Length: 302
Image (tube, rainbow, N blue to C red; front, side, top):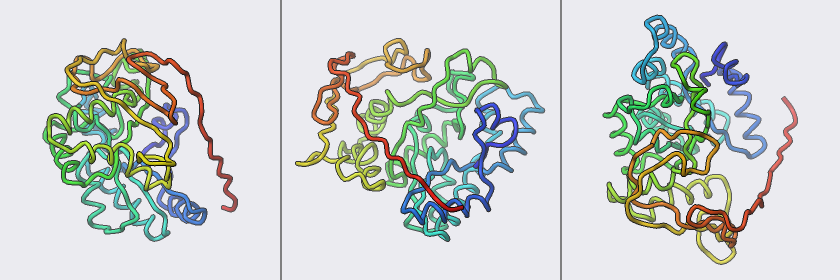
């Protein structure tokens, strides 16, 4: 919903829909039995606030956060859920960064809406010493709100987690004005979530599995995922426990930095089994496995 004008062009032409277009899109998505995922930030509010901060000289994570305030997320989340309900279209608000989206879901009260968040909205904040490398949309919030997001997760207000993995090399995030928004996250999502919520906050391992696997599998109609049972896909992670510092040069991702550099993990994947095949073990890939299924949905009509 937020990307317009120069910002959209800088992201390779990722344009956003206006409310009338969203209403049409939701109706078409519902017609085909599909599910909408929405980046909820109101473009009008973001545009106004961005112009204000740019005039002052954008030079910090706090300034970037002010350019995309929580009210922009709440307004957009409410609108998206309201229009989706009107169209009978299941909708997920992705990478929720604040309590405003949670309040919006309560206000709309539609059971067809789900909320997804990311680990960086709990562990990284405007006080983090990472500079433009921390530029992401929605933005990192102040430490108090990050703690409130953790509390909301523990209270069951977030349905599942995603990585929002969007990598740019450090050279593309060298200054505040031109830095590309996005954070690497897919390789560390599980160990960071386990460390923060299970080992430090007392969440059950069963609930962590729901947040990282089971709930999304149920929501998106993937009966062979998110469960250990006869006939399921045998996708498993075997954990190692202890203390281990995060180092970017040890991560298997096409990025040369990590915003979590130096943080201590208390559990991390030792081995990964995909479809019954060992595909990762202790930093190595013994059986490269390129299996996968691409679902091509060809829509017709407006």
